[in-house]
Length: 269
View 1 (cartoon, rainbow, N blue to C red):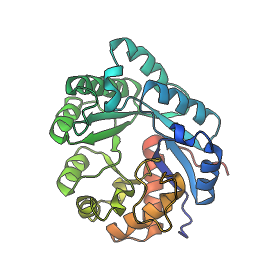
View 2: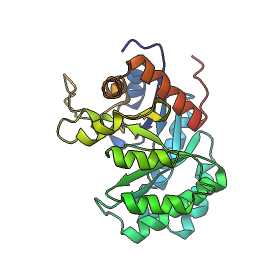
View 3: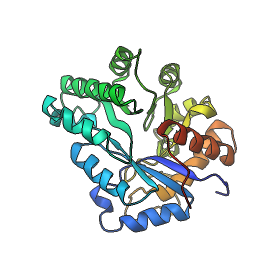
């Protein structure tokens, strides 16, 4: 990818233990590929703390502070103060990953809804954007978002995999759309490709969701099957094709959108 625009991976789970043996090399490879800034996803209180530590050690790393719906049962009223403190830590640029996941239901749905509301309220209190997750819960997700419509900060629908109708509902609510390597999946990516064909440049962001969602059309594919931020340019190419734009245009738009939403400065080098 020959674009002069530096890329921002808005969602990588670099706190995941699969990166423990070679995390510094993963980050180096990403930089060599033009990925100048990475936002590390906080998906539990523990992973958020680790993400904050990682971000503190590298000026090109940032993170979110939140609890994924899978872990919603771990977040009770007694943890609210802790999560609020984490959200205010240096390097944190968004509240989340938060939302609803009725596909897995690893946490009961009422717990998911309670945790989602708690994190939206923290976003309101801090004025931070929200990093959102939704799977098989579109209607309830929108209903809870709309409860906060009057004062909810902007946000991004992280790892969006839906079709045009879902995307339009998010765009109407001022959300950005985060696109992963799901768009490269010839089996499951049809709806997403239909949506991306009408995604405005001023709403697009790109992400890997590493170590998950390794693009299926990578050639050669890594033996580990682990996704990394180094593959963000590959995702960019697929998104650009889907949007009918040049990779350079989409790279510039995605980077601008990410730096605007998350209030990132340009890297110093």
